[in-house]
Length: 448
Image (cartoon, rainbow, N blue to C red; front, side, top):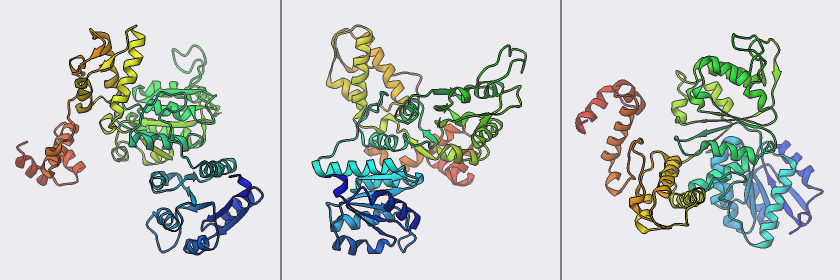
């Protein structure tokens, strides 16, 4: 279906949004109808034949749950399954927007939208309607080796696709070894800055002195060993993307310095009084839980808001179902080629051992285990005995039916928190949300 033949309904309680979209689309499509009140949607779609409805996700009406977009999406689909719905959302509604896709939405746009992106989105939806086919979300992001077919990874891929073209600051959360650095690179490679520098810094490993000089640079003579001028990582990433890994490990003083730079969009090298303007897209990552990160005793909330316009959570490998075997086969092919080995077949015992392992070290642990298996293999079939996992990781197990009892879950939660706080009962009780006395009672109950 050509764009010029399309009939479009726009529903938003913001008059400026309705006016802007109507002016943009009126010369490009057959007809544009605008409506402020979502309660009129039903009568409108009964009276007119719309190809696409562009629908806001939040209204100031009677349905005030934060799920207005989902409600009206379901209402529209119950009346006419053929009409396509594009949702308009803010950055903070991304998870809700992803949920809406599973319930029948065709796409969603992030405010503020780019006009060409809006027209492109409408064109794509119309093309899908014409061909009667839907293309599956790619499991391999452009230029970056991120494999996955699991439900949780498809959500990650969708977020990357939507947020990469924007300049929104991104916070990537996830356990060690889940591939947060690959996600950061994927966002850069799929962004408008892809031809500019991608600069990675492990800020958690920098001392207070190195933090200043590495990030902001210095002038000759700024300190004893400063024999020449040196450009900092912020300047090196100018025009491109700066990826700050392990952001949760920096001190409060370093956080304050970083916040100033992000707010002012300029850096002042050590030994200089002249500020240098910077133009970067900032991506940060941490293995800390967002609730732990938000503890102001350890991390400034104002900095969290600055670095966390959109957040992506990388799931642990144990939650990625069929991705384990998919990744294993990928690494087997990679290392078979590297070490000049023949192609391998996988015995059922090898696959079974992979599926039943907990992978505390995540994808990184899987990669090293596969590399070892390929190196040590004595024939072209890999058995469970060829798969040896690292003894340096704390072993766990996947949850079985016997582990789903409330008492077992509570006991495991207590053990995990106690281990995290080195046995400190007061801190553990605070994180668990119970009193010290209540925690002591549970310790006695479970013989801990």
